[in-house]
Image (cartoon, rainbow, N blue to C red; front, side, top):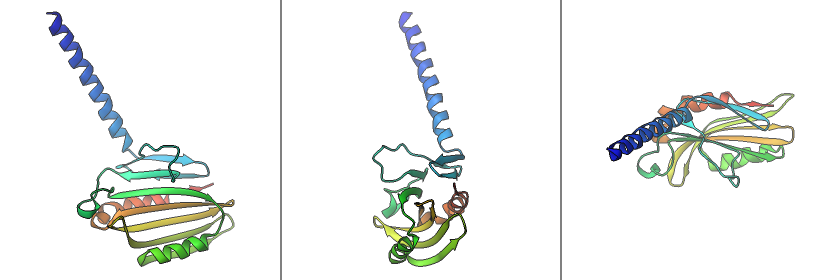
Length: 173
């Protein structure tokens, strides 16, 4: 009889833990606004912020749930990263991106009294996987905020609208 009671307690604890884990996983993929030092971005539903260590070369990373197929099976279907650096030379970044991208479909430089913005879109290969790159770069207060999203070309239809929405939601302050 004691074994039955202990067994029921263990099953109840397992069910409770499983429910908590499922809820946390579901919440990780819900839409939310993410803010950092000098920026904010609205993360779309269906994307998550993976755990990062302090030695990460990026200041922010947002990824899709799904991995790509075929030669892209080791990378997420879509990802967005932010790198913040000192400086204001967007022209050098533009030159670098023009060299890296093929079939550039967007290349726009905008200046206002607050900041300079570079928007570029084009295709390239990352680790043998063909992707479309969506880049928004902001120069503000002697810092460069470089948001770069990549979506596998096979899955671009599933992510292009969400990527554009996230990039359009960026606020630099």
